Length: 239
Image (cartoon, rainbow, N blue to C red; front, side):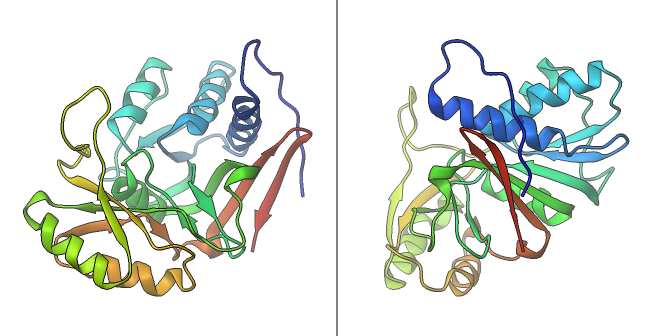
């Protein structure tokens, strides 16, 4: 277990302080010359902020963003970018999670970037997940995002109900109608209650015709390090 402190900005909420702690800590794990996957979300924004500062200090890296949001943010911060076409194998990916269980299996996708996040996670030698303590759970129970092509929306919803899930089409904010992913698809948020066998559920969801990917990340536990932001620093969880 490692700890580290980060100066907190004025006016930040307690959750923001913990996210900053975890994001800055993860940014410190990036080494010179690395190609790094850049996740999507508020915690990763802090990691990218610190990476940008380290670049100004002489760090040389390239980033692969997992969404338009991550790409725009990286460009604003002058983080050099590349693609999986140029680097199909990455040194490290930094990303967040909606929930993490005791075996480091994840639920992701609140930012609707789950498919690209899964691609970048699969390409990375090491996956660093940054969260605050509220995201740690004994068993996964948060809604599971599922990216589905619009053509197959209704059949996929029926299939999810057959598995015991309750799918809800995610609606846009400041936009009429459903959320559209960077890949042009819809997102279903699917409640299953406590998920006793996440590996099996991930496999069943991923095999449904019309499903591009689901937000269960069970295949990466051996290369996952979870950085948990705490009020007194950070701790690492790994297998």
